[in-house]
Image (cartoon, protein in one colour):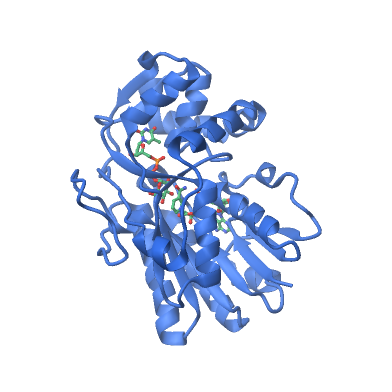
Length: 341
Ligand code: NAD
Ligand code: DAU
């Protein structure tokens, strides 16, 4: 019986990964350890097989709690738990340093102490900074670390700790770095679900700066399949960049989603730019393709269709997460520029 310990499994990507594990390994056991911050949502775990999936509410910075929750002979820890939103890290970095850096070290220490066979760190392309607007420039596994936001810096620090645990203590580790995910259950502070939620409600869509920043988008289940391959077949100590060769400008995305929803482009509202806003991300996924045989299954069009369908049929989920604390965050982040959601 395979035993997996997933942290941050009540969030957007972690919950998709837990689903994938339960589908791929009919006799596995998954412990899902999550602090249920504003981004963690028990609704994301609806319908999971409670005989194989154990949810434990806990903080990855609490070594005793992690130690107690980790089953004997755990095959792998897959660390998704993080503070994940760049704008929040610009407003205040404290929680990012605590969870993303200290929390990762706690998990590495417990993994060693309990003899966990493999540790997979879910990282991000943002540790490599920003690329110029030049179609020949890509992030590779050898690109230097150049994190530009407190979020990116905290994820880079976590990568260094994972590398050190491998080098110094021989822990079997793998790091994956992915670009921008989209799909069901993404918290609407992030651009795509915010755009969708606002458009569905005929509310203004805040676009930072000139709207020409480029992100490299991947459907969440394709990302999860790549993580699973890296977990199963990745070389010990290796890093894999994951991307679907799908660069898009923010403004192009906003217009195309508005078109698909039959809404007017006049909903787009240019607002002041994000401080230090990275211009372009673009991933060269050659290594994960050639070494692990990974390919994305979704095209941008098919993935977007699935995402839009999910949000349209889960307006209750959306309204629940857009209430209370979200409204306060929204007012702080966008102020008078776009008004209340
Ligand atoms: P998310 O914000 O949706 O979910 C994060 C989860 O971690 C939440 O369930 C939250 O409750 C949990 N968490 C936060 N602090 C915790 C703590 N101290 N202890 C235990 N649990 C805690 O994030 P996401 O978008 O699903 O991202 C998951 C991971 O993937 C993150 O590590 C992120 O850096 C990385 N990543 C995200 C993207 C993306 O596009 N969203 C791309 C590349 C990498
Ligand atoms: O590249 C991977 C990263 O992608 C992950 O590591 C992060 O966890 C994830 O949040 C994401 O970071 P971004 O900063 O790229 O994502 P976000 O959705 O915040 O923004 C996407 C783009 O849209 C970016 O250029 C900023 C812009 N944007 C964002 C928001 C929230 C807007 O124009 N308006 C907005 O209101």
